[in-house]
Image 1: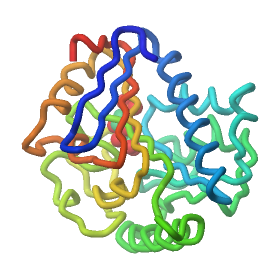
Image 2: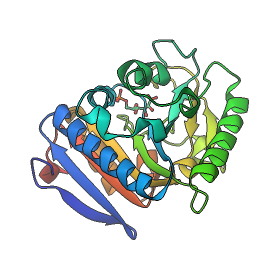
Image 3: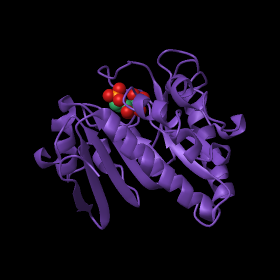
Length: 255
Ligand code: 6PG
């Protein structure tokens, strides 16, 4: 799968797979293939599949790829429910908005029914929107997957401090029992604005959890997260039935 030997090891009893690629385009193509396979398998069992998009800049190459042929027609987008792992508290068309990034690179080019694109309303009251979005997740997943209300695939990125979604090291949001929470991020957060984020409980609803991380500058934090047994880094606390890392700009034998 990857360029340099992949890694498969265990986080407790869960298999963690790590794939390394020389370029971010190759990592995006491999993850796009994973998304195609996951959606196809889900739609063999259920009417719809559910996908949680990551924010930040790294997923842009993946979203643009999914929006172009042949990938575009390999996913039955009409049967997709699209959610977001987190959102900045800005208007939906603001340059900081994760929804705006995903809309411009993917959602404007694929036929997901508008009522199946579930954006986080960053322009609203964060605490109230966090509660509303949590209920939306519960009702939507119960409707499309009543036997096991889970997300088919959750995409996450990784920050240089080990944050993922908008869950930052040491933040009280890490103890939240809800599915979604308002977050007042540290001053170092970029951009430095309040957020609304899936919690660790929300991320745990993933059947498949995929991290997409690009750049040699993140090699050290990837190593640290993979070695973290004390729960120092939120990304190390993000668990799911299966976890895969799609890495570029670093070699697996360095990790
Ligand atoms: C956000 C993301 C955040 C992001 C990481 C990596 O809203 O910023 O949810 O968790 O994935 O900060 O960001 P880059 O992909 O821009 O490096």
